[in-house]
Image (spheres, rainbow over the protein chains, first blue to last red):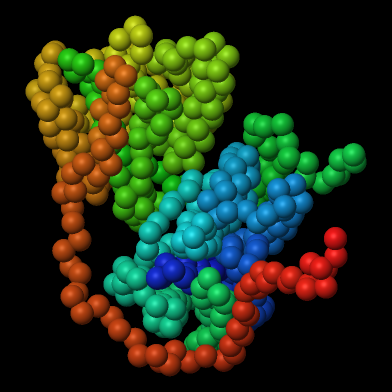
Length: 204
Length: 274
């Protein structure tokens, strides 16, 4: 059994027109037993930067705490928020530092950069960045998510349409994965507002 | 100024504090995760006026393609580029690190970097980690001593060659080079030969795929031709696409947070004071 299959997760981030969406499932399990159905996998770093962490839940929480700490230090020193590209480099460096004893986590980073241009990126557990212009996925459901996103993605979607697409891709992929599910948590971020929605999914 | 007790940004290098826990998990039968590899075909050749490097653009995670258009030709110095095969995080980290060291060296000496400098920095780093940093590189560039092309293996050994290939598709690409390479190729002939070698890797090796990136380096000038050839376009796109009606997805809760706007308040009474 792989260490990533211990807790189970599904994460997706997708780019729209001057906006982005980041979504996750809500199940926390210990192998085949579900122990929570409202687990938070997506964390806010600042108003326009979110990170989702898939993989082993304990490493995800530890990594989030370290990253948030480093961002707060950055804010104190620079008196401004970190750009998404800079944050992605920070996460990559922190993960690569543990190259021979890694955190069992795959982050998905999404944010609005300069001129509110959306930025998404994912990494493997040792920090190999993958920047994408359309969508990124992570988690135990990643193979289904790749397929669902490839077919459902369209460039330049408005926030409402982006929400529907991301939700449908997430729900259909979670249905094919035993270890993720119990609904979804979707954030759609535009330059003026953040819309956070929870989805009703299959409860198995 | 007090130092934070926890998590002071360290001086650099690797940190091994999670190793014991990971060993314990392996002992309990939990397999470690697979890392993103760049299955890859990377090539380089020396032509009349300089060096041409080429690479495919597929990144794999096990059998799944995780990135259809990644960049495998990394910048080292304005006159030196390096293609990387092996574990993606290792190639990126090692080329970034040596690129910074080269820039510092450049400032220190006041001279343009030489390819052998990059070569020595890379090989000594890789050798000191005894092959655990799994990066196989094709390094090429033009400096004052002329054009150079080297290959660097994960354990730290190097070769200096007129034409070189690395990665899982290296045999396919080398077959093309061995039959068609000759000294004194022109720029067009060189680029065509590199593309043919990479395409041979793309079509015959399962670990390589997608597009061809080419980088041409000559004395005082470089050209990074990203996606020079795209022999694998996506042909199965449905023209209609999926359209989901608004309100199709069942939503349990919605929370809208407006992002704060900066508002400037000019107090009229203050403006009047001297």
